[in-house]
Length: 172
Image 1 (cartoon, one colour):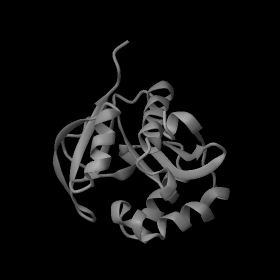
Image 2: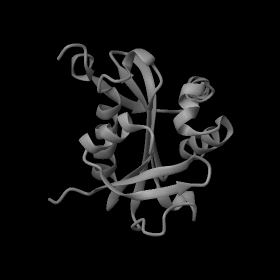
Image 3: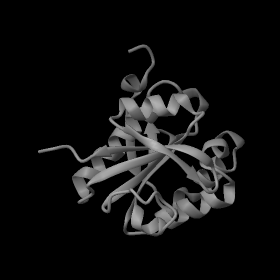
Image 4: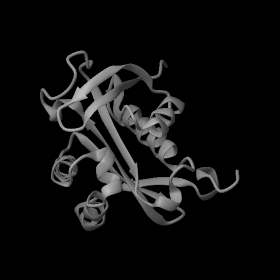
């Protein structure tokens, strides 16, 4: 496969409070903040997810090395700061690849597929959704490859205009 995610394998392992220093160091980086927003709000989001029974938090591992972070959160935890047309029972997915050497090689897409599959196999979620900055074309394409469909542009109060994309629970 020429050095892609399939060669080294992507594994998701549970993220714990012991991983917080690593996750926090990633969230402090300008390249991560560009898409995840200001450090303080990103840290608050991750801490809320780590402390919730209604979230799945994972470290993205490639060949034994932590390369990123992913979580899936029952959207009821986010309160009213989401689109009105979000179906009840939808989970919000967020993924980032922190290791620059692993970007653009399919690791994020693989991690997204894995966490999406985990949500559908371990919860009663009716759908999963993602929000992607409209100028981040690479991540939007990865979301499409992972089975997400565009719904519309939504204006995030912190990050500005984003694509609101959804993947429905697969039919049995």
